[in-house]
Length: 97
Image (cartoon, rainbow, N blue to C red; front, side, top):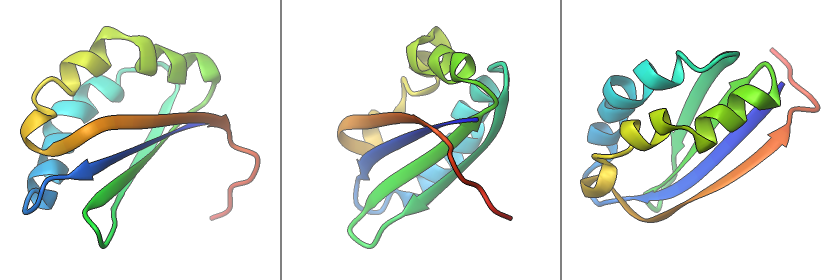
């Protein structure tokens, strides 16, 4: 299993709008990526967010990171976030329920 971790800064007062946009604009594309498992997003106390997205294999993660679906899904996020998104990809070495 592979995980994409994305970090960015949420513009003031836009936390709920970002949550809605993730559901409406991102999930329809992301959920069609082969091997997609889940996405969780946390909002930090200083307005930053961190998204954790998992796929069965690295290929699905790479398809999302480099694909057109991601570009389309995030096209309208300029009024919700500030600065560049920082991405990290890694293999999940431990998971617990």
